[in-house]
Length: 540
Ligand code: TEU
Ligand code: CA
Image (cartoon, rainbow, N blue to C red):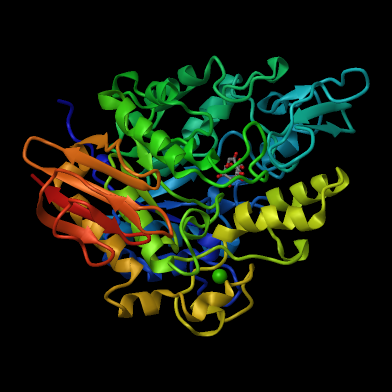
């Protein structure tokens, strides 16, 4: 059997630095704020921190548009702060995972500033330029942030490709020099002793825009093997690729250890279950719990030893899970714990998105003026022009918009939830007086302690990391129950994913209760599960 890797046993916490903790009153979270909160993170028990981008950036897309990969965004602090964070985290056995955004740069990166100077510039071919076709865009490729993916550069008369905003021109990975620059930069960070990389839209770097191919291009895996060998392959680090289009077969290409590419990928199949088929994420549909069972179970059973799963409910691009698939009014605490238990007992590396551990909720707006996120803002304009009812657009934003996850962390019941003494860059959720870290820490029954316990179980029970997964097929649609089994033990996880009582029965006998979100049963025969009831029992 292959040697255990530290990241197979890790629990990762994602920080969106802008919204985590401000320490100098400018309303923007900073690295000092993260350093100051390491005790809290250590108490939770996580063993790695993924930081959304902290590099120099004009912030068209909050740091996902990088103008210097080897400099820290001024608002966040200095490189000395960054070095201190890496070191202080390491003293607590917490590794720092950096966000690697190399599908594109900012248009203010010197490479692009040079490239724009003209067709003869040595940096021109760092980006993707095409001549107009019939006086217009080269083809109909669209940007994720609405409109065409091509922008005309008037000076040269050519278009450049931007799969995201106009201020995020796509790098040209076919150019060997681009790849070498990227590897050098990665080595700069690896030499600092970081714990690895989360790779932003890495599935797009093999694009062939002339053929309309963006994701999973033909050279993608060659590039990743080359990258592995030139950079992180020599280090004991983890890598996780953000791959929206991954199927289990594709995930194996990335994460089968014999292929020497990545440790694991984020798959998004479950994330698409509450949108209308072949439509956009804004075209809402209710989640069918049976679809969730099917998709998550498929991922649990299909990778085997040829890959490794990541487990997540939300990130900085998706709504808050308790508002999305739980119940953030009547059963906020119960449903947040139920979802946590469901995910954290699965096989793979779990990711917790900041604020999830205290059950932070979505934060609805009433007008587009309250929205910061470029994706939502552009979509609003686009759909308005197409004749949609503004009320419907706002509704979609309130359900799916990225700002939901980006409101500042609610630390206590002081003004602005203790996030800042100044004016926060994005509104704080008005429920901060009720939902905040201080209140969670003071309440032994809070969601926080459920997460803490789940992390402890993962550390103390090898079964949670390695055990085989099997779905219990014959349950009510809204009951998600599965077993994990190894040579020594077997556990049964039972979760009622609904606001109603559900019947459940099983022949297993309870040996011991591991974790629960309300009084757990002492038999499994013909029981009634309360709304959002969840428990994990060792069985025989
Ligand atoms: O996200 C990739 C991506 O495709 C998202 O824009 C996604 O489609 C959308 O948010 C969900 O509707 C990554 C980053 O996570 C995101 O924050 C960046 O905006 C994007 O790449 C560009 O770097
Ligand atoms: Ca600040």
